[in-house]
Image (cartoon, rainbow, N blue to C red; front, side, top):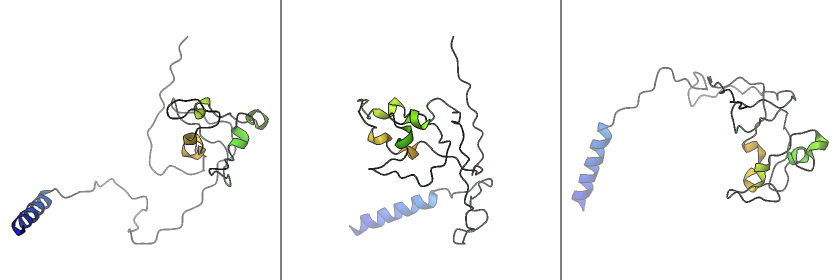
Length: 150
């Protein structure tokens, strides 16, 4: 027993010593700036909601629409969903809002439901409101132009 434990420890140690050391690339920068991990960082600047606007154009097919208005104070839990008070099928015309897509009424097995599917109930999981903040990292994404067929 002692012999197999010693052999296992020796084998594990030799494997660990033969692994290459991790080297960080010079161009990788921390979002914390030069502050060390144990140093206190500066208090974040609270970004303002983008002003209410028309629906925001999508960049790719199947992109969830972005929320073109503030949602601060919106209550969303398993009993209440503030989004439905304007975007629900019975309320959207009166509110002048976009109605919820029919795809939100199907479960994962594509069974059509009378109410919103539980997996689509929490809107802010896919639909995000906009703030006046610059991106944390650069982005070179360019949308592919849609192909229109006659």
